[in-house]
Length: 285
Ligand SMILES: CC(=O)O[C@H](CC(=O)[O-])C[N+](C)(C)C
Image 1 (cartoon, rainbow, N blue to C red):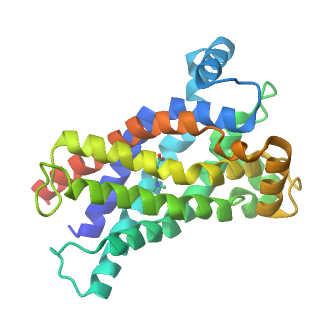
Image 2 (image 1 turned 90 degrees about the vertical axis):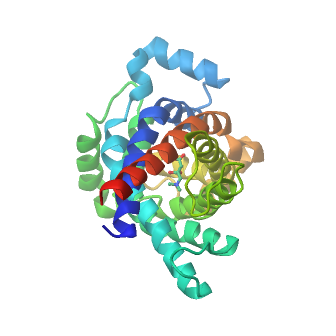
Image 3 (image 1 turned 180 degrees about the horizontal axis):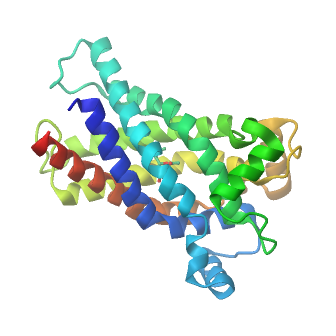
C-alpha cells in the first residue's frame, strides 16, 4: 500500500479518536462563542447538563462522527502530499527529513483539500450545536436538506473563506508543532517513530498550538455560519468590525479556554490513533 493511502486511512482513524474524546468540549466552545449567557466553561457545562442532560454535550455529534473520518483522512493525506511536494522541491529522498519550512508548507497545503471536505459538515455542526429551544432541525441530514433547500449548495459552503483563514495558519502550527517536537523528543528515533507518551504529548501540544492561532477566525466563522441569511452582506470584514465594535477585541478570543481544554486530549487521542494505525498498516501492508 502506498504511503499516501496509509496517511489517508490512519488520518481517518485519528479523526474518529478525536471526535470521541473532544466533542463535549467542542459543544461548550461553540455555545460560549455564540452566546453571552455563560460566565465560564463550568457555568456553560452546568447549564447544558441542567437543561438537556449529559446528552446536550453530545448534540450534533452524529455529523462530525460521520464527517470527521473523511475530513481527517483528507487532511493527513494532504499533509503527506505537501511533504512529497516539499521533498521534490528540496531534492530530498523518501527517507530524508525535509526542512522546517517544508513541514510548514505541507501543513498549510493540507488545509486546501481539508477545508473543501470540512465546510459543509462544520456548518451543520455549529448550527445544530447552537439551535435553541425551537429545534428547527431534526438532526444533521434534516439540517443539510433544509440548508440546501433554502440556500442551495452555497449555503452548505457558507464560511469557506473563514475556514481557510482558520485552518491554513492553524495547520501550519498543528503539523509544524507535531513534527518538530516529535523529532526533538528524548526518545525520538530517526524516521519518526516514537513512544506512545511522546505521541500523546506532541499530539496534544499540536492541538494547543493549532487553536492559539485558529480561535479568532473560528469565532468569526461560528458567528457568520450561524447568522440568518443576509445578516452580513459585507462578509468577513463586516463580521469582524461589528463584533469588535460591539464586544471588543478580546471577544476574538471567546471560547479559547474550552478550545484549549478540548485541544490537548482530543489531539493527543488523534495522533495516538494515527501513529498506532500507521504501525498496524506498516506491519501488514
Ligand atoms: C479546526 C480543526 O479541525 O483543527 C484540527 C484540530 C482539532 O482540534 O480539531 C486540526 N486540523 C485543522 C489540522 C485538522
